[in-house]
Amino acid sequence: MDNKLDLLQSKLAEAKLGGGQSRIDTQHKKGKLSARERIHFLLDPDSFEEIGALVTHRCSDFGMTEQSYLGDGVVTGYGTVNGRLVYVFAQDFTVFGGSLSETHAEKICKVMDLAVRNGAPMIGLNDSGGARIQEGVNSLGGYADIFYRNVQSSGVVPQISAIMGPCAGGAVYSPAMTDFIVMVQNSSYMFVTGPNVVKTVTNEEVSSEDLGGASAHSTKSGVTHLVASNDLDCIAQIKRLLSYLPQNCEDKPPMLPYKLEEEYREQLNRIVPENASQPYDIKEVIAGICDTESFMELQENYADNIVIGFARLAGRSIGIVANQPMSLAGVLDVNSSKKAARFVRFCDCFNIPLLVLVDVPGFLPGTDQEWNAIITNGAKLLYAFSEATVPRITVITRKAYGGAYDVMNSKHIGADLNFAWPSAEIAVMGAKGASEIIFKREIDAAPDPAAKLLEKEKEYADTFANPYRAAARGFIDEVIEPAETRRKLIKGFAMLEHKAVARPKRKHGNVPL
Image (cartoon, rainbow, N blue to C red; front, side, top):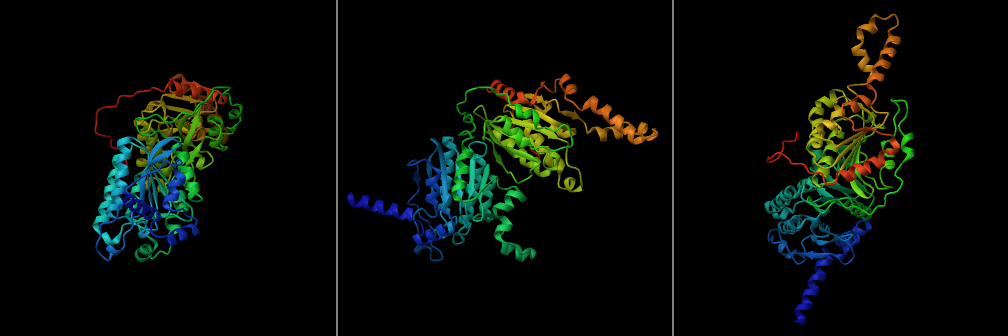
């Protein structure tokens, strides 16, 4: 019996060593943690339970029988983060470059299945060179097995992907189907085809970092939601993100203890300028409304004319969508519509209430937008809000013009409560443009057309550039002093806590993808 225990301990020690100490040392020199170190820092102390530590590959081609490592390049199992159950896999780049084999994929699939059955988040720490070439179609089939489970898990449990090394070819599609992606600067990259293939096909010379690094995907493509400076920062961001999320689609988001005090925020009265053309930072409004330093922004550097992220309001986890007047005056365009739509759908999947802050002059005009399908992409955001059944509250801080007023969680598409600040302007379009159309003949016939235009512009603004007509029709529930916003929202979300909506019976809707 003692001999068998000794053999087991030696096997486990071998599995924990991975592909060799020298390779691990090389990883450290690059500022990267090993797969087991990443799990160690992610999970609570002594909470990790490994699954499949003694698994080896089954490939016998190309001399692979002489190269076999326990665990086969991925560490899988479960543990807790701040006392809450999670499932995790961490690819080990020191074993065959973290390449995915048939058994490697089976290990990942096993923990993904357990995550769904037991209703807990799935976290993938990706660091892989792609499919294991020696295994041919078996490794490709392994990827497809993972992709299928990504889809079956979608909207059931939160899925988070950390890209902590290379992620290329078919490997990128699994993270793309998860809910959130975190990348590490200067040590991770994602692309379907690498720089060498790009050069061969298009004659472009580009580095891995420029093609698919954290900077490229956080600013140009919007593929990644968060960017970390190193592995430890990446893990810290995952843990913070988890703190806002429920365990599964049938669970409620975490709510921290909070004692109601004086919720009046006088600083909110001073944020919106009197000049309607002058920009202001919507993040100042978010900071004034939400619990101190609770806002966690996502995709900060992509489509920054809209702001999305999680925050807490009196301890309650909420999702925020807000137009940003500091960028493109807060208009909706192709990228901002897609960015916000996916976030809204995530919040609806996992019972996270939505707060929408509106200051939108409309959709961005131009051939570039029309040819890149602003119609379809704008409709994605409209669809996302319209199908959402979570508590939804809107605050119009200033402009709400045209179709963008409808799209940004208006009462007409199912918002529960709609507030407006006195500075709100709810109209088909701005006063100047509207006056030029409505009063064109009068202006052209006037002795001084410029003065006549100003007169008619004021007339239109006095009539429509305020929230009171919409309030008279019930489209706005209340016009409130900005400083009262936090108190109103706390009460509103508390009132909507047990909201229930019966949907029509159907397989699923057909979102305009």
